Image (tube, chains in turn yellow, blue):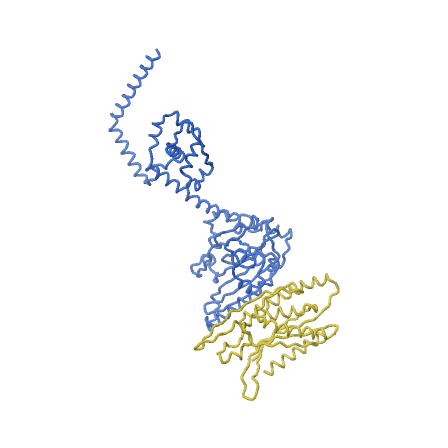
Length: 219
Length: 400
């Protein structure tokens, strides 16, 4: 099985990193999360409700919608902050890095092996951090990034509505193989965030692609 | 200025036969709605809507059936597919087309002038254009926005109007508020949207090739000082005014009818006015009729409850006056008399609906009846002349 992968490439200011990544990841998670499943007899289940919150960005001219789950938001924030800090600490002239949100499903393996994780969708955000000299440029750039983000969200909406492969809705016994059931108020597909800090952007693309090819072939 | 157009359509040619409506349909609809949520926050119109104010500009929306009018978006537009729900019966699609150039330039307004020309000379109700594509009147989107929708909705107990204020909602408020803008007119009844099957649809009749059904929502940007440049079919002011006029007419009908009924009833119950005038004499009745206010005060005294409903009597102020020749007990009679004069009952002939032949027949029979009684009439007239002659002779004697 091949995982679908999508790459977003953006140039951002350092202070915008967190918001750009949050905007994209939360939009993705909104689409890839359901209300909690409450299983009943005879294989039927009820799906709980899912709240949403509008989140205004401070450093981008942008508003995004996220799932109303504090726990999920905190987890994502923690991951993204770590990425941002790593990116910032890599004191390179042309900083760039990539953070990925990967949706996967587990496959039970024979004892004593761990369950196998099979990604089915990977979203990569490749960021090129720039620094601007004056406030005027920053203001213009703020709007530009907002427009870019608009395109990205439209793209996400388009991709989501292609209705490509999604793991099959599981039985009660298999729900942990598909969904992350650790949250009380939301049930997203199993996902993980990984990041990678690179040097110059040209080399990072090839590294990324090589990694993807390797990952894909490995599956 | 049209900012964005949301177009929802059902294409019956694209079916996903294998999809289960109960499961795949449900989840796909969920995804489509989530996409809709996300995308509504990223368009330029959303940013504008956050800054709208009653004294600056308001954003309205209208809904219509049929093909979306993309030409109103201007030259620079972006199209995007927001949602898609493939089902065994067809594919429901949500598409967005939005204006990217938000500046109002002089060239733009000049270009839009041709669209403002009247091209529909039919009456509103009979217009072939509007019968097919009938946009609802633009309604203002609620002000402000709902930042944390879940939390806000949880905090119940908000007054409906307050709720509207804090909600950026595409649903019309129960009582749309006017913001002093001529082009933003409240419309109390939103028109029901009927989605017809392609065969019976008027749209389908008009466009035989049109196989899909669609519903369009467009966001309008309107500044209070400048009417928006839409063609006659989209002008709200005129339509809404008509609707209001109709309403006011119909509401006025009711008290008017009740008054008529009341007068009729009183005619049956009360004194014949001829007797009144006969007993009082002409001189006194003339005096009273010249003092209309006085009489009316009496009238309104007896009709206090109805005068509030009737527009004609609203003009009068109830003043307690003592008429020079009036007797306190006879006020009701006088009041009735005045009212009879003011509100003449409808003619009996107009009440009875008769066909022309019946009327003619009746007239003929009456004429023949009069002809048979002609002798009696002649005798009567002759009698009168004899009396008159006697009177004059008496008068002349008296003068002498």
